[in-house]
Amino acid sequence: MKKSLVLTAIAATLAAPAAFAQSSVTIYGRLNVAAESQKIGDGDRNNVIQDYNSRIGFKGEEDLGGGMKGLFLIESGFDASTGKSGSAFWGRESWVGLATRFGTVKLGNMSASEAYYATADWIGMHNHDTGPTEDAFYSVVGAGSGTIAYGNLKNAVAYYTPVVAGFVGHAQVAEATAGSEDKIYSGAVNYDRGPLHLGLGYEQHGDDKQTVGRAVYELGAFTFGGYYGQVSGDSKHNIWRVSGMYTLGNNELHLNYGQAGKIDGVPDSGANQWTAQWNYNLSKRTKVYAFYSKLNNDDNAAYQAFADAGSQGLGQNFSSYGAGIRHNF
Image 1: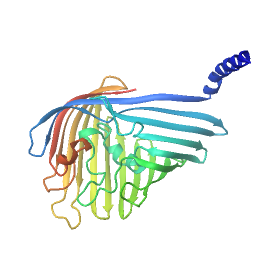
Image 2 (image 1 turned 60 degrees about the vertical axis):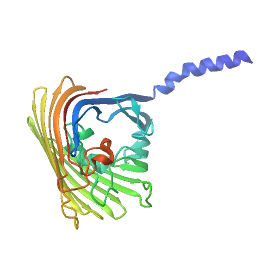
Image 3 (image 1 turned 120 degrees about the vertical axis):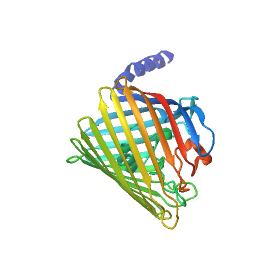
Image 4 (image 1 turned 90 degrees about the vertical axis):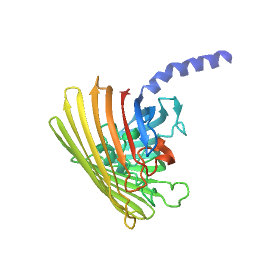
């Protein structure tokens, strides 16, 4: 009896590599940390080691035959300056999906809406729209608002169309956020053909809605991009942002400027933000960079530069300069 169990265990062990060989798993991630000097409002400058959304993840797929694939992705965010993980270990992203020739379906926790990835994420090209230089306006953190956010879509269902003539569509619906009974809806369309890249995104949470269009064009060593959006609901206003990049060898020179218009019925509620950055690519995976960024809330608007600033940064002017290192793996 014992010999039979031992032989069965050995057979199972030998068979395991054949089973695992049907699927592939990739480990990936990013560490992005800068030494910088930050100033919030009228406070003193604070010298910090600042993490820029470092993360580690695992993704995989299994060929099921007939053009079908099983998919999964789990991703954890952490602060590379302290080693601390996020509030939930797989809080950045965790989903399972099925890809067919008719499109892809995903179920789980999505890192952000596809409307965000189709628009604002493209325009924050200087540092992946992360950290203190990230877009302060797209998330609708305005006076009397804040209900639409490009953070995680939890308990979500997503559908992605096949690519047809350069077009691909996305649709998502997610469970209501805490304190709300309204589900979050997101839709996006992307078009890529040669040097031209277009995107259109729509988000809705109750009465709050946001529609944003994006265009990026590559012209030799230059890349130009911009988006324009309209926000309706409790804080009706417009947002827009433009960016440009010039490459010379391993060097990249970036400029990024955005504005949030005045909110209807709220005087002195506009704001602007700009960033200048130099990147030097040591390889395809590693770069060093230096930057200066400033958010102007002179009209007493309720925007903040980045989440780590907390309530003390809400509605305050913010500026930062420094240098950092980013490595992708």
